[in-house]
Image (cartoon, rainbow, N blue to C red):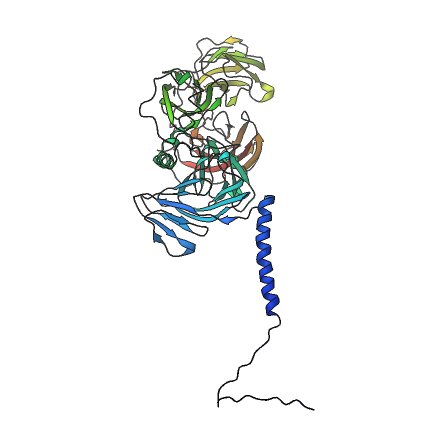
Length: 591
């Protein structure tokens, strides 16, 4: 029998309700619950076993009360920031003219933007074990201070990206960054690691060093050629001093983050000189002739924990309470060396200073002693003869006929040079030998000359001999112009007539060596050449009518450095017109 279904009466036109069964609803809800429980359990387990989960961390932006500071949240429109605000990854900050702003990150890293600068926060992730701060400096410059290693738990990577490079900043660092350069005042370990954009090339910039990259650093053969010792005058820039004061105002004794040396509050009344800090060397009023000076001193170990000399951190010996630093000197004739003693709270507790006088005068001229004296003429039949002379004080090297004597060492008082007909530095007839002394900074003395005549029947100094036309004696200076600024700058009359044959023929030479390496650049010029110039230096030994010339490129001479070296060679006629212009390049890697 069929079962009949009864239908309940319903209003006309009213919809009837139907129940739809969803057999997968309950399992779906169960899965969601299980997922939440697994997430909670995983977080708990990761925390127990040391696997922290990173979270986005805010940075506090503090606009200074001048100029206009703007922020862009998550790439939105720029809006003015007039008070402290929290910024997260994806947010940007921009300073206008005469405006500055500072950012304080979760680990204690402090960054201060210079005026007309733009910074974007790419990453600010705080994890239990691994944390990351990545910032993009799109324009302008920034002062950055990072805390000591003990101030933050766990590993952290701090990076600043510029259009040309990415820098990884270590702990306890004070640095200034721009789009093309970096200056490192303090840094733990070897220093900041710079990676060039678009390549894997890296260079490390350590404490007390600066790096200024070219427009296209990816094509540079040696990035270390662009690294240099920090200019002492760089520490006195208003931006750096103001940044240190701003950082010091955010820091207070007892905080786990120690400010960079030099920040904080300077004692208004320094303690008596010598009570906590003494400069042992150099003496006040000392005259220095080199480009560096070693500063030595001692401190009260209980009161002074760090010492800064002209803004640089000195090397401290905690056992003996002494400090030392080799300081690069500016080109000023009068130099002030300021030494600050800093306690553990970052407060300057004592100061001392000395005044130095830098001797900028070139060394005195050397002297020929054998086989004749300065300005004399010697005649001989010997095809090999030893020329001897004396060197004045402060002489670091002797150059004879554009050749630097390899056996002469700084401090030597005598020198010698071999003239040998078989070595092509001694020829039949008159031979003029010119000697020049150079100091440690590459400054050259006035030249002195002696003439040796090879051949004839006479042996000895020629009585009454006078220099012939074109020769130089001790009392004579080179005739004619010694600077090209007033000479004609016409297009070359005979383009392509200058050639270089050594150290490599053509237009370029690639080599490596030490600080004593030298290269003799040799070449030819067209007939009718009266003077030859290399990088605006007139070759003194080149005589009108000759077609052969040479020039010494050396690190100690100051005519070559690590990296790319360009030598512009210009040949001029009797009317000082340019006959030809030629550029020779030496790519030198210093070991």
